[in-house]
Amino acid sequence: MEIKGEIMNISSIIVKARQENVEDVKKSLEESGVCEIHFVDKDKGIIIVTVEGKNVEEEIQKVRILESLPKVISADMHMSYCEEELEEMMKDIQTNNSLAEVNSNKPIEEINYYGSLKGKY
Image (cartoon, rainbow, N blue to C red; front, side):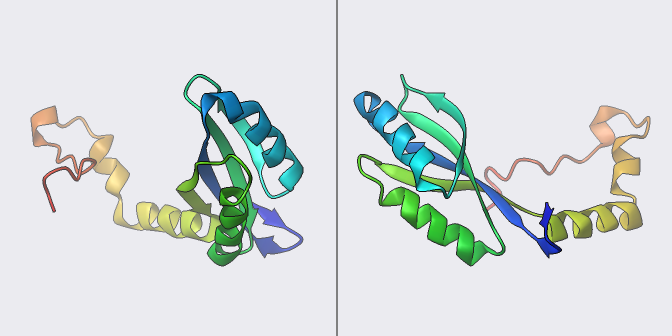
């Protein structure tokens, strides 16, 4: 995402609240002006929001604002995205031909899967 010539970061935040406080927290989040609400699960006390910033430090400042709102139990950054990082990954994919192996007609037993880190560290 680019705004006025600046590359922006965007991160998803999981906000947790007690079930009985979800509507109050949702209203506080809306009024905060630092996030956009995308999902609310009142039964689980979870609200998913996104924050944007010109850098990670700005995003973290916004997360701290969310954490400090009344009746918020926690506000944890779940995923962060930066346009520059995506461009670098796309260049890497194009240069090292890593997708060619996945898209080949190899038998599944011959393809190495590296998606799970469980037990590797």
